[in-house]
Image (tube, rainbow, N blue to C red; front, side, top):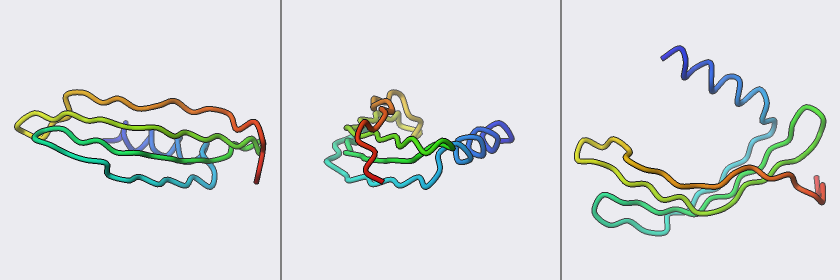
Length: 80
């Protein structure tokens, strides 16, 4: 539990003004698909944006078996 708290504290200290939007695309059986967009800036004022699709598959106990997503990318045109 402490490792999770430490991970999230470090993440949120780095990702300033974090904003997330998720939209459910569909689900069937033990699978879920969603679209996401999020952005944040670092301490130097550089904005980062991620967007894409996520797919999850779960077992009968609800444990996530697999997940696919996207990576952060630098926002070339700093619109903020």
